[in-house]
Image (tube, rainbow, N blue to C red; front, side):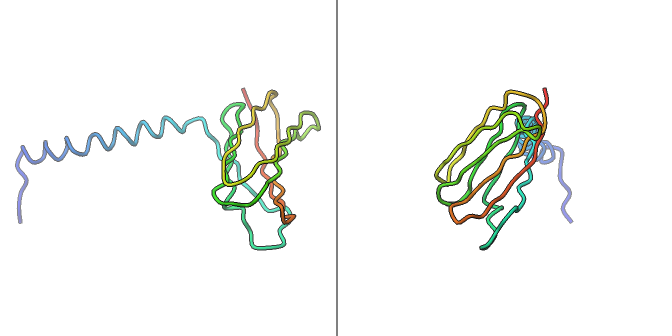
Length: 125
């Protein structure tokens, strides 16, 4: 059995330390993003909820489509019935929404084939 000497231990530690620093900075970068769980509302074909990713960071809702779903209609509405934003976008791509007021919101995705998905999220200060 081989025993590591002090030089080898220091070298090994020196090689591993930058990896730990990179992981720590990546964690700090993602601190504000909260994923929005996408659920099926009405699906007649094979589910595509995995291809819709959304997250909220403060007042910014980020939506990313990871595959081509066609022209998707997106509606962001307040649960209380106030603010509503509507966007139609080709996929795959990403879209940002700025939500002005705090509160509970629902984002709804309507695909060209009639399938509908939604996610619920909170905007806080």
